[in-house]
Image: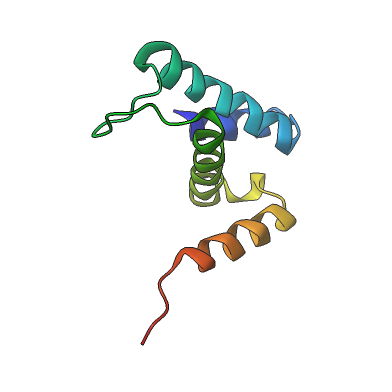
Amino acid sequence: MSIATFCEARAQKIDFNKSLAVALAGQLHVIYGKHGGLLPGSTKPLPEKQFLNNAGFMIVGGALKFCPKSVPSAEKARFEKAAASLKPAKK
């Protein structure tokens, strides 16, 4: 849902940061308003800051698949660098 919101906002010529904020707000409202910050399989609510960082990363990653032209090259490079740092080192 949030990726579609982001892609549509970008298609409407809304800037990257505002589009990401709108997509995050929608997701945040559902997770915290309806579920109290509990994600499936967790017993404690996820801190909002951690949620926002993770959700933002996931939205940008999804947008690179579904509407790649909507992600500025600098943001794409930042995402790819962060994603590469998450991959385990090969032995």
